[in-house]
Length: 168
Image 1 (tube, rainbow, N blue to C red):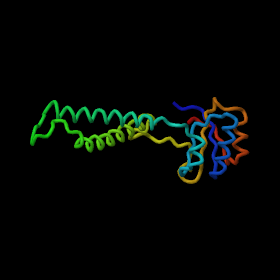
Image 2: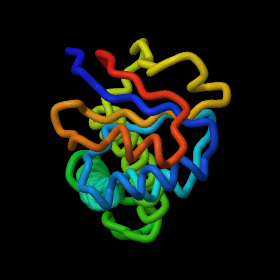
Image 3: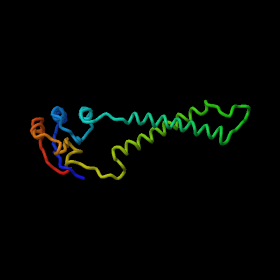
Image 4: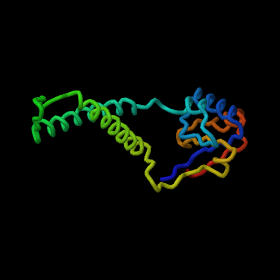
């Protein structure tokens, strides 16, 4: 579903950073910023804190517990082997298996959680605000219903070379 948006086009990273700062000072909600390269300044201004590390920790703990239970079940309950007088349950050999499967499970589940949260599934068509977003221009997209009256003047004073009102 497309929404009416105000799109500011910039040709310099420093102008985009100053525009984002001015817009944030005036409590304007920025939907997204598109650009030809990743900029740490822009990312720090636009992104929200994520809870993905907390989710990865939970995935790791669950993977470790389930792996321990599986290894315990297979070596002690389901198919116990008694050879050479060794105990049926010996924890040290299990540590490596638990460690490796915990890493594998955590990484896999975290990637799937990230893909699900950002809706970046395979085959999804990319939405670009205009020609030049991958070449040499920066685009600041703002939802039109959440804007204040002077958004255009704020962007023009920050150095926007073009301001458009489009469905995006």
